[in-house]
Amino acid sequence: MIQFIDKVSPGIDRGWSLSTDPCTDKWKGVECESQSVKRIVLEELNFSGTLDASPLCRVGSLAVLSLKSNNLVGGIPEEIANCKRLTHLYLGGNRFSGQLPDALSRLNNLKRVDVSDNNFTGPLPNLARISGMTSFFAQNNNFTGELPQFDFANFEQFNVSNNDFTGQIPDGGGRFQENSFLGNPGLCGSPLPNSCPPPQPAKKKQKNVSFEKILIYLGYMILGLIVLLFSVYKIARRSRKKADGVDGGKDRRADASSSKTNGASSEPKTSDNRSEYSITSMESGMNTSSLVVLTNSPEMKDLKFEDLLRAPAELLGRGKQEAFTELCSAMASFWS
Image (cartoon, rainbow, N blue to C red; front, side, top):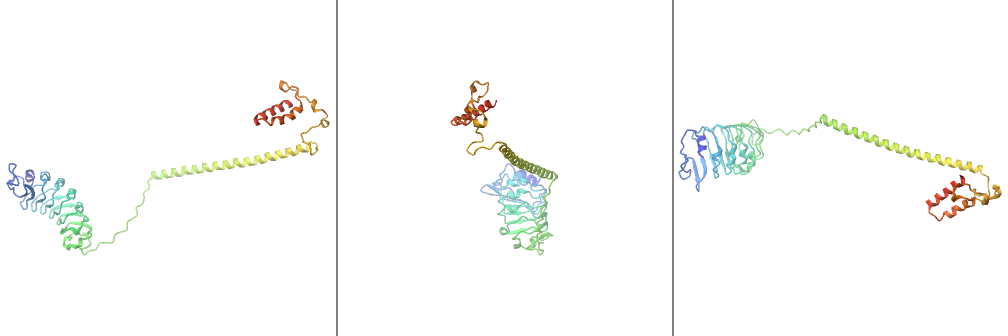
């Protein structure tokens, strides 16, 4: 706290000393409860220094800080957020400048704030998040931007006149007098006489397609076209093969039918009760029993034509593959 008083009143002895106690020795401007510092009120003392919040906020029990009507300069430091039990902050009537720090919006116990009659600029921090605030004074500064969405139902006092605020006054602002908002040419809505213009319909944002995306989409289209053409080619080729197979089968069947017709016309007609492959001794002019197969195979030695005719019947009881093999071997031996 000594550092704090040295900053706000440099070179002036205010009776604050490290060898004394602020509560028992009753430091000037310090009020205590149960031997704990609760309020520091240093108003109209012509202080011309700066506000150093770091040593001040080490006093964890501090609830009220009032430095009204001095000549303090500079800005409000972010360290003000460490004064977590602060409920009342009065800094009006000085020469403070710069923007109000966002740290103020983190002081959830704040009820009354007075920063009027200074040189503050820029937008207000989001003080609307402090639900218990009941009083706010910011008139006669250079604040800009829109007003936070204060819950005016909880407010007892409110004044932001003579600034540069713009936009519509939040709902509920009409419960205060017009002079609480005057001097802000850009403000509109109740309780001010100038009404706000109807909101403009939101313009549809045009999607900006980059050149790289166009190339990617074009590549996908070309790839899809290649796949489609390849599929059509495969289907057409398969259909052509099937058509060729059908035509070839028809040609082979036609050739086979023609061959049979020609063969039948060249063979002599026999009796209906006899097979076309039956040969009698009278037709052939030889005795079938005397027909001998000439072959070098010892197994086929002295094989007669009757044996060949009898072979199929004997092969019926064997396996198909074995019977077919033996029959083919016998026929080959016979005709060789």
